[in-house]
Length: 143
Image (cartoon, rainbow, N blue to C red; front, side, top):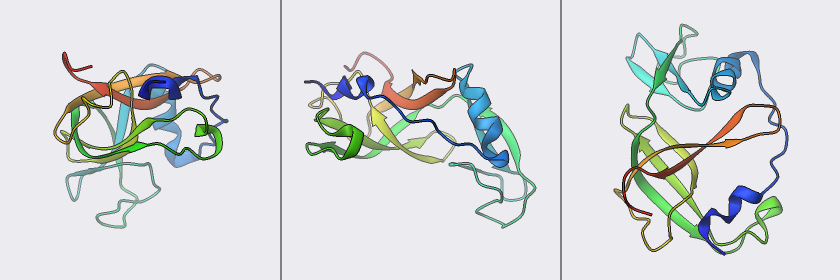
């Protein structure tokens, strides 16, 4: 098995809320929309009803490219729940170029190539309802 075997996992329906609706709707077009707090000038992820920097509701949605680098990673050999039987797989913490950290999976990358500092870009896993789940893949020739 390869670390990309997790692409075969059936994903359950993802519930959305009014404050996360713009994020999920953008994934239908494989676009990454992040909340932005104009007062603190900071992006945030995952969607929330308030700014984590100021506690205010005055958030904007901005499209970002989604490129960044691996800040931390774990090669998981013992999956739980729907991940059981799809090991090994890579769980990564990506620091996007806009300063936001996102935990996701790394796909289309051999485990021996994955490393802290590896540049990554979004890869969108199709969901049954037309939305997409944000995963990451190497941004360049590394695979």
